[in-house]
Amino acid sequence: MSDNIKFLIADDEQHIRNLLAIMVNSIGYEVVGQAEDGQQAVDMYQSLKPDVLLLDINMPNMSGVDVLQHVIKANSSAVVIMLTSLNSLDVVRQCLGGGAKQYILKDNSIDNMREMLQEAISKNIGLIAKNQMSNTDL
Amino acid sequence: MDEALLIESLGIEFAHDLVDNRLTLFHNQLLALEDGGAPFDNDLYEDTFRRFHGVKGTGGMYGMYCVSTVFHQLENYLTLLKESDCCDKSDVYLKMHGELDLVDKMARAWIDGERDLRQFLTENKSSVHSNETVLILEPLKSVSDQIVAVLQDNGYETTLVNDGVKAMQCLVLGSFDLFVTSEQNRFINGSELIAFIKINPRFSGIKTIYLSTENNNKWAVCAPDIVIKKDSALLTTLDCAIS
Image (tube, each protein chain N blue to C red):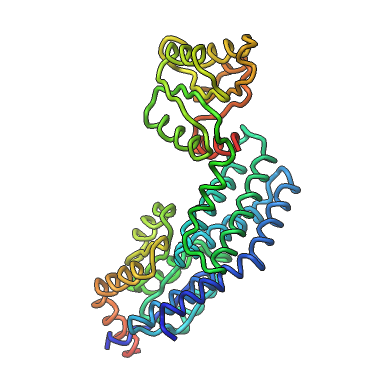
């Protein structure tokens, strides 16, 4: 069941969303939605119920940190992967303490980011499968 | 379409977006920030910072690392504008517009097929003060290494010393365009050396920069050309002051 993993991408930069979508598709997963600000990310997470949320930190309307709080409050086992650049690592530590499962550095080549993403999915595959079963039960 | 070709095409689209839309928007946002004066328009500031941060990340993902470097520097300038009051802010804005113009050149080169943009960074920095010399008096190696790097990036030929007597010897025996010093040094303090430069007509061509860590006015008696606080924005302020 966990082979078909659904992603929601939340980033205010359209160019980054496009690139992440290509990356996610290239490793065989599905992008079910793209949010361009924090509020949209919360709304789409609730309606689309993705298995993984790729979440940028600096977004308009609601920051990634606030989105994370909303998502984790609704589902403490949600798989949220933060997207960040090197100089936001303090915020990332805060996010990991707040329930994010992993982070990916944007200051990287596509190939490196793809590897980081695959590693993050591998580490959380059990949780993803469990969430998928819970969603099916509902 | 092949994934590599698709990414290449999206990268060019991003470069076009920079040239056609975003850089103009950024210039206008900086003009609005500057025109607004104090107190700072916080919403506009945050929006500008977020947009710069976005371009920095996007540039990195498309392999435009030099564009990311410039936008990282632009973020530093924005921080400087908000947090520091020890430099002329109109100089900072001017510098930022110049950096945006540099990105314009980089993006156009990317569209034309150039994939190594490092030449733009090198040309921009080193041509400013090529053939100029600077004497740096800083006892802390961790600080002096960074100061030397900033000055060399701007084209200066650097001489570094770590006590006041050596600095005095260099001043008397050498020829310098710029003198950068901290206050606390062995044998002779920074303010005493700047005072020595200021009263001696032989050194009238030397510009002086005083790096201050203390909340006192020791520098006031020696009247340096520029005073820079030794805080987290030191290197950015220095870079801006000499540009």
